[in-house]
Image (cartoon, rainbow, N blue to C red; front, top):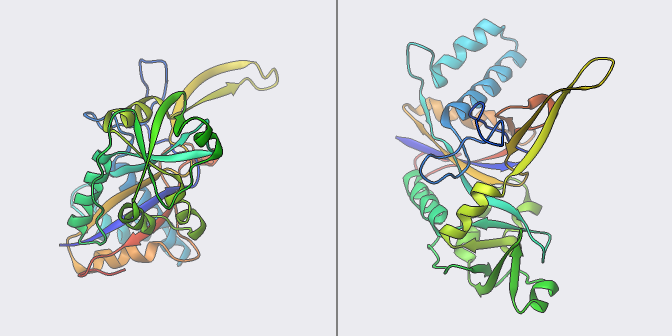
Length: 292
């Protein structure tokens, strides 16, 4: 089967939730049950792709019913499967606040290992080596920059309130593999200078506790008194994720590639569309059998 990889760069805060929670956060992010990594589940991603497809069909002159019928071929309907199989959108780079730099793009060997496996599944090159990193240390690229604050702190990096010892190593193969996932050239150019590879256990702390918590409220008309205060969890802008799309037939991937053009490479997914959340910039990476 032909396979494509979608690169997803968050242009805004992303809230792909799981409904209400009994915890402190009323509306948490969807997470993988074993790792607690934030995730955009495949059903949500598929729905967003389908909505973009139907919107495009209506702009071509179809009515709503015709657009829904047209979408049934690649995306399926209640009683039949479509031509595309869509995975979850997996986390790869998480922006983390730094006290010694503006921010860092954090990742870990486990995420890199999964990314490498998924690249192989998609038949896409290059595939990065999996770095080794110890507890309490952070790997940065030799091509990157260590700030004056980090030098003055004896080569230590502060991410949130946690301190890590900096090791500068060659991460060129990892940078080369990540850059094609990012649509904008200026943003791609920041990967080597902002990349930070943490130990799996250190990274899991940021994945669990380092996301944004935003307060939302409903006010009474006229009096503007508090009516319903709630808290929701979001992925920050510049988060980098990816997903795999597998086609059951040759025509289905062509439909997908046509969704994202040079003038419209964006897609909205998750909640809070009316307040500007959920927007991704999409790149489509092909394999030898299904170039895009």
